[in-house]
Image (cartoon, rainbow, N blue to C red; front, side, top):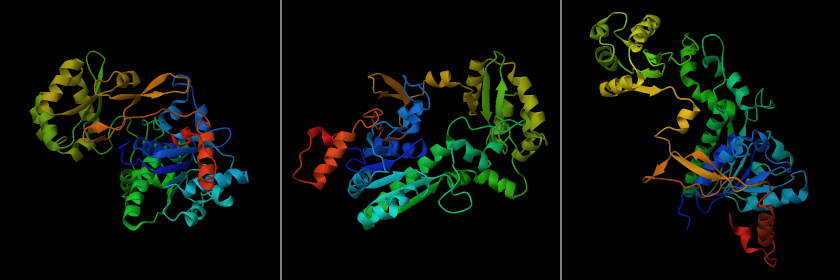
Length: 391
């Protein structure tokens, strides 16, 4: 028996790339049955790379535990099949071009008219109205358009955040909105129509630099430093290793000056006494700290920082993450029978993480069984193989 919280829910996702698949992967992890509707050539994320045992790293990560159904929505028969499935669904997620499903008369309003308990969630780049509604939108394009790149990178040039942060943030926002809608439906019995744009999501995440800029002090790119806190940055050690330290308040600064720098008088120095003082005099303070840090090896410095109660981190690369003693991993099946490791789901429920029950599907792997299942539902005299209802 599947006792996960969303067991028994049916989710249909007409999805591609990252944002919608991120959302529905989380629903699948929680026990929902997720039918991934793909165009005949498949989700183009299947071809992004071959890094995961010959499969796309994005696709393996974001499509675990789903069923793949190929539908050609230019065909009336396939549109009717989609409608029949959505009549029984709890949630429909889609991230096609705005209006694409409406033009085929299978948009959110049409689906919800047939199934008022249905929760629909449409993900777009810039929303469905406004001056940029028709513009194509991908992760890096939204990073640039929203100003995120302008505060990312070093002083010389802007940079892309190293992961698909806009897509992930949007998928997480869609996931949260769907869970809210499920709670609301449990209270009053009806679904709702959710619209989420990548631009709106990341603009919300940009609130702190936005407020700085609105106040007349637009933030500058700081690399691995923090624009509002000092000292907060990376310092080299005697053995060539690097450590990132973070001082959050004046009490921590006093302890750092005393126990790490061996200079307790710096806590009262007018240049460094408060965080605002330290930010104004960041360059001088960083040089002072760097000179002292270079006298210590990594292990000794880590011991000193831990004993002093100072927040710090190693500057790891991906090999460092893979070997990290704190990392929990899970393994995901690939269609050829191999497995690949993934970071385990983050949330723990009563001390347990969700178990990842299945890996990524092959294109249309479940199509025949799903078609047979809904043919039976529309015609009770038809027969269907037992495996039609299995995940």
